[in-house]
Length: 114
Image (cartoon, rainbow, N blue to C red; front, side):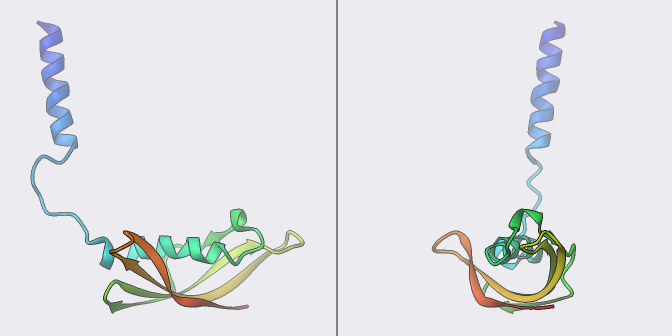
């Protein structure tokens, strides 16, 4: 009897955990600022001497949603240079969600300055 109750409770928790309530809390990935910002970090890392040392600003300094799944960011990253010193680089970048590729692509080439 105990096993039956435990199994029933486990199954009930599984359905609750999977969001069986039918709420509409899903975010359209195309328009999601947070996802776009995190994905933009991967493009910035391509240009760094030490991508594994990168520490990105938690929230961008400036942000613009340009429509059509296009996002533009102004931010900074702290990362090591060739000598191991941590330097801050400001940058702008544009990313876009491409439905055909089901992935983020570079929309505006990054610009860096100190």
